[in-house]
Amino acid sequence: MKTSLKCIIPTCDFEGDINTEMTKCPKCGNLLDVIYSGKGIPHSFLELFKRRKATPQSIFDKSGVWRFRELLPFPLGDGNYEQVLVSLDGKEGQTSPFKLTEVAKYVGLNKERFYLQFEGDNPTGSFKDNGMAACFTHAKMLGKTKVVCASTGNTAASMAAFAANELGAMGALVFVGSDKIAIGKLAQSLEYGAKVIQIKGDFDDAMKKVLEISKKENIYLMNSVNPFRLEGQKTIMYRLLEGLGWNTPDWVVLPGGNLGNTSAFGKAFYELKKMGLIEKIPRIAIINSKGADTLHRIVNEEKIIWNNGEVDFEKIEKFYGTMDKEDRKAKTICSAIEINRPVNLLKALRTIELSKGVVRTVTDDETLDAKAIVGRNGFGCEPASATTIAGIKNLVKEGIIKKSEVVVGILTGNQLKDPVATIDYHKDKRHKFANTPVQVENDLDEITKAVSG
Ligand SMILES: [Zn+2]
Image (cartoon, rainbow, N blue to C red; front, side):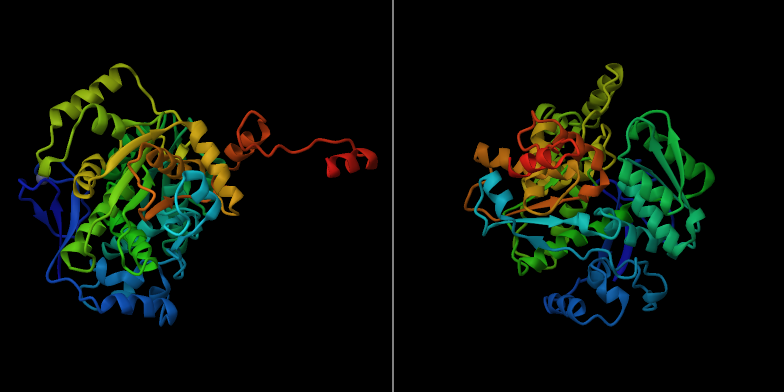
């Protein structure tokens, strides 16, 4: 099967070699896809993927990314792929959809038809490990020894861990904004030995600078503008489908930040349908936080659509121009999606068109209440992940998601990523599901009262 890089705009004819580092079309400046030409794989491979999981012959069979390697075959070229595949000892992607009774009740869905997939169960605690396995593999194919990313925290932690494992810790360079980074994520990057540079400003400022520095210093860029990241993130949907016996759900719901997952999921479903491995594409609902709602504004207010690649670029420019003029900055408790300039905007618009998708916003209060309910179910997630739950609840209320439909929500990051947000919520009794610690004197009578109270 031939692999190449292709411009996402159908009328642009750029197609390039994958053995180069490129994140933008050299002809028109738009995003690139990794594309595969050839027949694809037959249905019998779905059994092979399952078998690799049950009786792995290598860490790549065990990996939740690489056991699906024929569905992201860019490194398989010469057959000697074990030399280039990168994995955290096969531990990435050990996730599948779960049923959660309390959360189902909270969002108003039937517990038999409602699932959540905890991507926070990845080795560094977020979905990013899926994409990093693929991106590091591409970097290795190119012989790169130094990697860089801008991050709100999760990308940094994941990249730093892979770098420490693969290249030696000094190879990782992380740019974060000075405004906000969840403490657990920063701790991870420091511990994994990455060089962390805090830039005055927010994620959007850090992202701009990282694009310049990676070019200037010729360092491999690991952000989701890199199409190989998205190849790895497609596997989140393969595991979801496998968990449902390769039956497509009616809905997949996820948080919207930089829109890498939205883009990757759309591509995964498009390719599977083209190969005849699934019959239909689910509807995808993307949930923005109210304080970082660019996609919502672009889709629901500006009415900008993919339109088979004939996007109204002028309208998008005008939108961002107004944003700059008003000095509008992203602001939400959901640090992982506190992004006003999503780099994968166009690919997300394409996913929305392809999947008859919808975009909604939720408030921080709705998100934190939803997060507390995930906790009550004995699981946990970081604030951004809980926008998924709050979004589903609202979509059920709106009647957009029907109670008879099969729904899968993606929870992107582990609850220990941002313990400060969790403690602040529970400390404040005004919150709906607050579980406030009881303060007592060191006195047995007082303690007895507190215990029985
Ligand atoms: Zn182009």
